[in-house]
Image 1 (cartoon, one colour):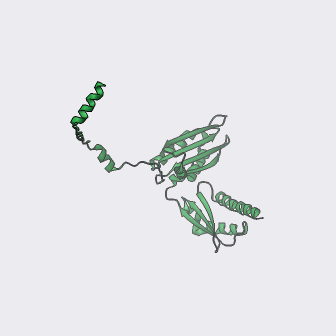
Image 2: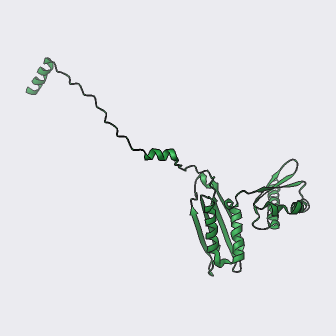
Image 3: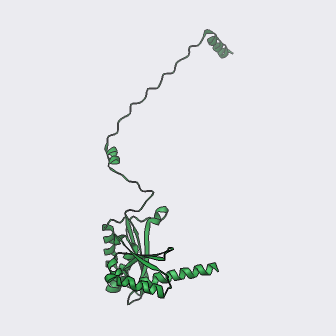
Length: 237
């Protein structure tokens, strides 16, 4: 029974997320988290356009709150809006923007759209970016195109620092898959080697020639007369 309750609980949580994303529209929400507190349910929406999400005098928030109470039977839902400082480093917002551009301009200009967004992200200061478009672009056969620039970690613990997202664009020729991976300039790279001014100054300094160390002279042992006689006898025998 516990397993069924858990599955039903997760299904309801997934339904809430999908409804809010569909209701607010593509390209407005990056991520949505739900926290359960003793007071009620806390829904955190991360967006780059808080004004469009809130609406005039909070009308959109009030509508969402009423729907969550009636349709999803939440007791006391509380919606919190968090603004994303730099949307260029958010993979989900970039993927949604690319999908909307493909739907608006058509798939014939997919290279222009992808390269323009890639250069914009790298110019903004990102360490690396990768964009993958898959679908009928523009031939009748489905293909996968990759646009990448900079440094992008593929393995190790630093791979977790890469922000990844995917979405779909519905065009006249069919659906196009969009995948985006961005490495934030503040990402923790454990194998990064930073060369600052102190290291550069040390490299530029001329090397000092080290004087060879004088080896201590070995003392020769003088042989006694008895030892010399023994050596001579041994040679004669």
